[in-house]
Image (cartoon, rainbow, N blue to C red):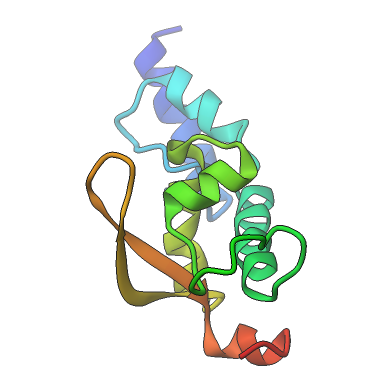
Length: 133
């Protein structure tokens, strides 16, 4: 079977199920079939939960929060706390923001690379839900 046909067929199956780019790990329609297979192996919702709870635990002062610094975390700080690489944790933040769980605080911190990074924090809804300031 032609590999391009197989890839097209796999994408059509995803479209029939109503899943989009974010539901299959961020794989694009023109990516190779190996990228689609890799994307399908990622537990996107599970990773979103892990990243969200990292921010929540840091925000509410539970054991993960030892530094006593300002609220919120950058993707680099999240990645360090969770022992994940940045390309694994970073794509989880925009969907969490769209779903109303976290917000861009407007603050920026300089990462180890020297580049400025967004500081993410719980949304007002989630602060209220978890009873934090």
